Length: 234
Ligand code: G3P
Ligand code: MG
Image 1 (cartoon, rainbow, N blue to C red):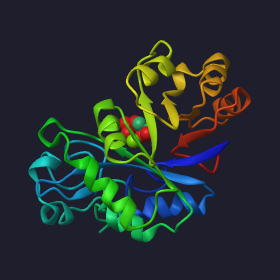
Image 2 (tube, rainbow, N blue to C red; image 1 turned 45 degrees about the vertical axis):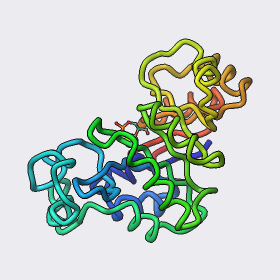
Image 3 (cartoon, rainbow, N blue to C red; image 1 turned 90 degrees about the vertical axis):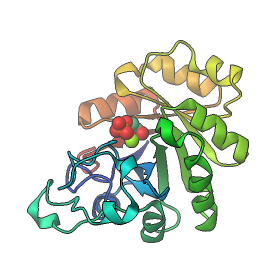
């Protein structure tokens, strides 16, 4: 079972920063998960929330700020003073900083205002940095996944689900999503779910598991990968 650093080793460093991604690798993760969205000037940036208030010294919507404005924010100090000066990375900077061969789960956070624009930009970067084999693109917005598949037949896609969907494999087939993996929240994991997903040819990547006992249960169910903020205790 793979362990993937959720937003990096986000219990130990400020989430979605290059510092947190490097810590995840130092702590033995097989991969990292990160969230992307577009800035006002349509650069792909790595950030989770739609507003900057929780994890920076700024305030306001990401979609209303240019890359230059976002880069002026400190996204380290909110977590710990030792991370002062940490900046919001672009996806391009992360692809430059993380060595080839490391699994990178790029989760696309889509906003209505940018519908249809982020998918090609993400794909172009994955291709530019020759990371087709390393990357899985996931999203709770399944229209995004459909757009990705229409643009590229090879890229691995992860179906992120939060609701306890009945037979996601039927949903995948009906909508021609052609996914590689199903990414359920850990609350809905069961042995039957994992068995059925595997029988239909899908891997199971589950989020977010921070408790070793739950990780052990997931392992015994046959889960393929888990996302964790505490990769070293898992
Ligand atoms: O990709 C798994 C997980 O990151 C989904 O939820 O809100 O942490 O991005 P969230
Ligand atoms: Mg995420």
